[in-house]
Length: 147
Image 1 (cartoon, rainbow, N blue to C red):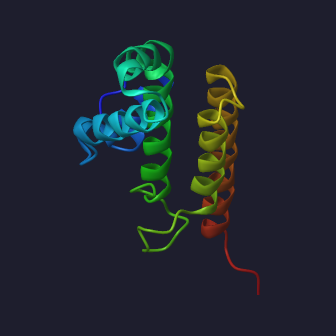
Image 2 (spheres, rainbow, N blue to C red):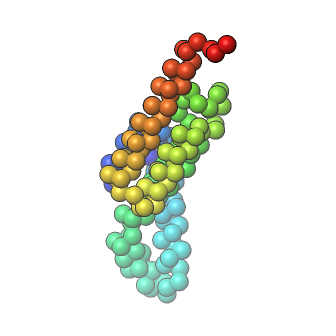
Image 3 (cartoon, helix red, strand yellow):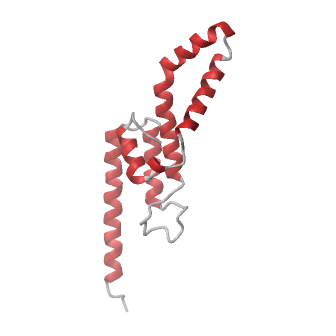
């Protein structure tokens, strides 16, 4: 999946989720988009359908693509977990608490509830908190046990 409209989502897809090499094809996107157009123009008389299809494409194609990309990215990232996550044991399919919180932020971003700036800021705060928590946990590990 090649993301052109949203630099933040493109960065996430490339470096976090590996979506650039995913099996989600552009052909599937076009199949779904054509189905949406056919469904839309089906309610008009046959002689108007070509004109209505072009009008739909002009008015909706960019937003449709953006929403589809966000939907696919969130769904794919929800099914994975960080490869180096020390919090979730050995289960690579169940996201840890930190990943779950990050997915909640990503879902809000995909739903346009957060701007790119807000999403990045909140994600950095989450990662900083996570880093500090791990640092505390690591320090406890090296402390002598109380007797």
